[in-house]
Structure formats: structure tokens, C-alpha cells
Image (tube, rainbow, N blue to C red; front, side, top):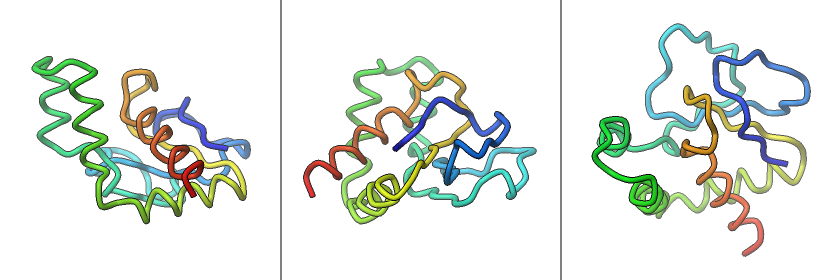
Length: 117
């Protein structure tokens, strides 16, 4: 199972399973003990997140560019798909709303990898 409802600022709970930070830059003020794994390569590229936060691109354009940034990272996606079959994983970043966060796109990509293989 893949969960995306929490941000890195939310308290850890046993139901989170493996907590995975998926950001390029470590969030300020967060202890390393808040996550089990840091997968910076699955975070949003810096320029893309800047464009999104500055309102220069739409969500659809952001989503397309983020998905494009995952090309070549199929091994990481397959690894997460395997982890999610074994137990719960929770994808984390600083954004509190998962509907406007790359976590939702990443979850879809992981699940797509799982269905394909």
C-alpha cells in the first residue's frame, strides 16, 4: 500500500510503515529520524518546483514535466512497487495537500510500474 496523505511535518505513526522522503533538498528543521529513507532523485527538479510555486505553469504542465523527470528512474519505481507489495510505504515532502503535490504523481507512477511488471 502507498500512502501520500501526510507531509514530513506530520507525526509518525506505526500505520505509516516505511516513511520515504521524496524531495531533492532536505527540509529545514527536520530530524533525520523522521524518515526511514531519503530518495532525493524522486523529488521535483528545482526549476520545475520554482515554476509551479511562482504560478508560471499549470498543474497539468507540472504533472507532465514531473512524469518526464522520472524517465530513467524505473529501477527506483520498481523498488518502491516491491516495497509497497510487502507493506505500507508513506511518501513524504513538505506540501500538506497531496492533490497538488508530486507525491500523487509519484504514487501513480509506482502503481503503473507495479501493474506493468
